[in-house]
Image 1 (cartoon, helix red, strand yellow):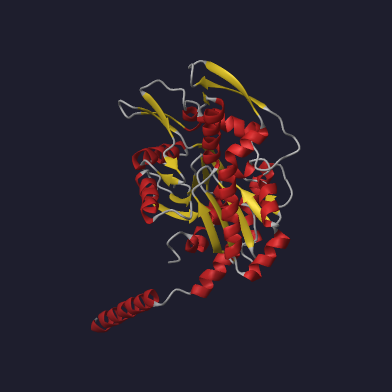
Image 2: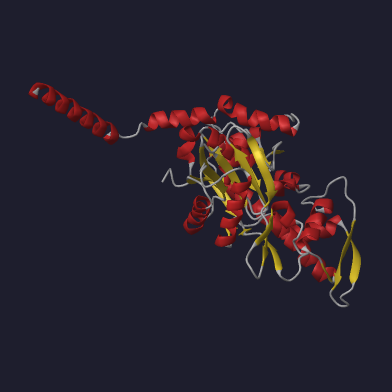
Length: 334
Length: 62
């Protein structure tokens, strides 16, 4: 008998929770393929290490962009391999709950469930990421109080107000931490004339990136390829430069939080001032982001203590109480 | 013998009627909502969240 699974199919990372066991897999959502034969050469961490470093016949790709499937066939293969790795076979077909962005279209929704069913799931249901994040962040969403959660992922940022087990207000933008990396790449290319890869851009973000000035700031040395000469070149980047480079992305995320606050009913709005908002997702780890949101909204922002796992833990909770919580699946309430 | 057959048919028919009526009964939404809220409560969350909190090193708050 297969153990049921919850999957956080993120643009950046895929996490799998197994009923009764907890998180059994946490890997980058990357797959490496042989261009000529179409064979899968690597998935997860191994494939991630290949990004930007492969010979011509190998391609390492992220099959999800902006939280949506950009390549159905590759996503299906990635899900099948993930399920195989956690013990799913032709004879053990588990029920699967998959977390997806709330702004996903009907076509994308069907693409995800079909991919999971073809990959070996007996039944596949979807749950909105902010709802799963709120459960995983241990917010009291069973009570008639305003719980606000901001989930900043690789390709999407979603803010939701949740009360009595349901979403009251929601605001989602297809902007996330990958857009921050892309903004850094563009800035370095334009202002310093060097090309850097997406992994280097991510390292810069982690090292000196911030959404608001912080106390512990330092410069970073960055190596790339000079666009004029084609030779390797080193430049020094400051935190102010990176803040300037990523400003548009950060502003867009903050603006969506403000729009969600504006949508919330007044009775719940007053709860936020006391209870604050909770930040989850890898993008939420950007230095100064909580401080920036707090400054612009005048509402306290708290960081979940499991920011990277909150979504899959929430979905895991749903799989543990499947019968009682199946009314929370996308489509079940309509 | 005919009495036994008739009784069996009556019992079978009654069973079918009961099954059909049960299927037609609208779902108890109040009960489903109550169960959903209970399943989201702190007691129900304990098993999943506490395990993750232990792994995270026991930091304070949500």
